[in-house]
Amino acid sequence: MPKISVAIPTFNRYHLLPYAIESVIQQSYEDFELIVCDDGSSDGTPELMSQYTDSRIKYIRHQQNIGKSNNMRSGFNAASGDYFIKFDDDDRLTPDFLARTVAILEQDSSIDFVGTDHWIIDINNVRNDEMTKKNSRRWGRETLYAGVVDNLLEVVFVYQSFQVGATLFRRQALQELGFMLPNMQNCEDNDLFVRLALAGKKGYYLPELLMEYRYHAEQQGIERAIPYLFDKIRYLESYKFDSKNLEKIRKSRLDEAKLLLGLRLIKKGEILKGRELVLAGKSASATKAWTGLLLSLLTDSLRSKIFTLKLSKRL
Image (cartoon, rainbow, N blue to C red; front, side, top):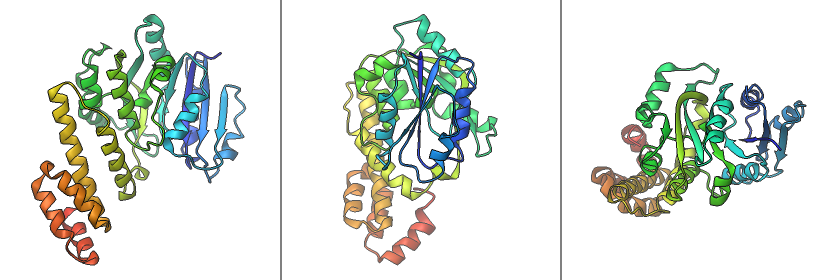
């Protein structure tokens, strides 16, 4: 039985997937299995996977697209290692990621997961020092010290400092929580960390750049923004915190997500649902809310032009 299970969910990324796979094969720690779960790719992914002969690699192919979180769950359900990591098909692990993180879990059985910092890379695999430092500051990792995180709920909810793809988990801890929720395409990683914290699990932060997160054009666009905001609202409505401060932040973020989604839907022409959400989230910005409601009264063509000229950068 392998000590570590590594899962890479993939969908139509055969041009980037080899970099992710090679980053696992080249690990200095070799006691692992690699599970590539393919969500019905229509590109050259099956042909690519047929070229790998390493016995540690397992390929799970779904004939039809079953959705992001369900595909992730298929990789987790196939895992047999004591420890588990899932990272995306466009990212990479550095050669010592497994060795550095598993050592901490092996030394202290009370620790449930170990998260690290990560590099930002571009489509050509070039590391960006400036963006890496900016990213670490943005998500609060710059002020985290090595060791067990005492205020874990605050760190994972408010600052969202831990990144699933840069974290090695004790598989038993994930099994107890059911891993990722089914049929959730966005914010599933935030949701998982919040559930871990609420369940009293112990997280350790290792302030080393041991993973590479790729920024590229496929991550952008309104087509991704609308489903993301729907899932963000679902995620934020799933909890009610005992802490007054955390609850205030949750409600504020929920209102903001409703307002932004409402404005997106009005721009798209889904007026009634858009108005409903804008009104529900108006406390996030009364100015944006009333502007959106006024624009919802215009014709489709005129409203689209005004959104493009005046509001695109704000949304």
